[in-house]
Length: 321
Image (cartoon, rainbow, N blue to C red; front, side, top):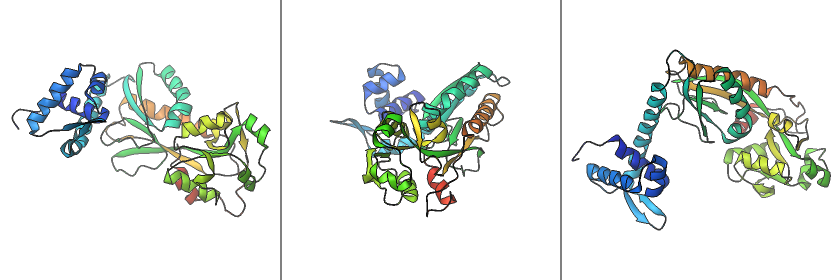
């Protein structure tokens, strides 16, 4: 190693690793393409090996580059966390809070909650990360996360804030055209919208509706916002968070008195962040908002022969966001 490795060289390396090209990395970093190239080349000289090779699909990382990626990401997360902390007044509810949520929550559920949060704390700035993959709080990828599975890491502070019921919904026009199911067996004659390859989502469906597998879905996608959009377009019947479905004038509940499990929901932060005023404010406001959101009528009839909503059902339901 001929020279100290500079952080800007590592940032350029990470941007190329994640985007696959010098031009895309330059756009992400707000610099020129030659600058990115020179920084990557400087890093290659420092570590004494090639990090990327050219292919028809762009720049392909070598084994060394892939091995270095995790450390570079951890440093990027730490750097971002440093900037968020440095730009905040330690005694005020102000500054940046990076918030990680699942896609459907971020699109359909969270915006009104954030509006109330900003009215209450106008000096807060929110960086929103939408992904069904769990954001890494230990590596400070986000400051606060809303999760549909109970955190196990000892360094995390978690609070269960809601149990969000699930239900079947379809567009009013679809039901007018195809008729309304009155029993679970009636679903066999209807168009269903459901998961594509998600093992947890497919397991949830088959646990309640044996025989309803992937091949029964006329629209198959593991994106929950896309499933909801398909139901809104009248393409069939989809499983939806009941508060979301009931709030949508385009959708109507199907088999409304069936208990189809629920999403146990936690809000989580790192123990080192819990007492920061900006983090505490987001934590408390969202906990209150999600409790209110989940308070909808809960069906209490179960599918005949399948028993009540059990721990088995809840474990499958957790994966749905």
